[in-house]
Image (tube, rainbow, N blue to C red; front, top):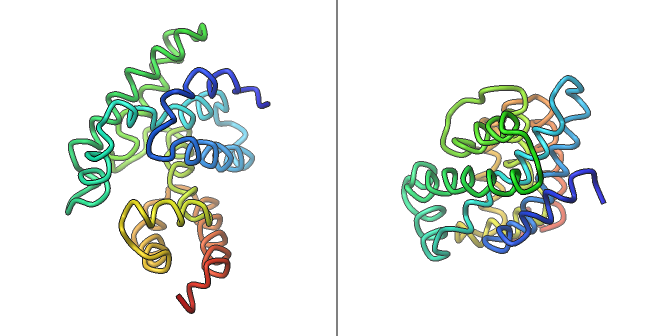
Length: 195
């Protein structure tokens, strides 16, 4: 188990919605990869931020998650997106306090969670890493498989959307490279040139 296993275990209940028990571990792996390029980043802050960034979805009705959070016209600015961020802040505070983290650290994690989907800019290097890792899992074959269902798209159409709409949102050049490499592999695995 990783150094951060206690945070994962403390937040596990909140990960049992919206495939977060798949999304968060994959995003965590991407965050660790990005940290290798940025040794000056606060790894503990990145790890806590990525593990806890989406636990707020736990507080939202699952029908609303998919209808308003993924399939509405302006889904990135939908009320449920803001709500999952504020609920994520609330729930993460309880998780981290329960594990004995200091208030200053908890506040920094909350600053990353609050706005990670809806804010158009990153506040710090750690925020950039979390925001990019949150997006990068989508380019993995598992991410395309899961998210294509969320958005009611074929894997090929979703892969095209990732290339067109998500790669330009990535903050770090290493993230762009990872996304492009993973998307090429995913397209091969899912036979996107055929299906």
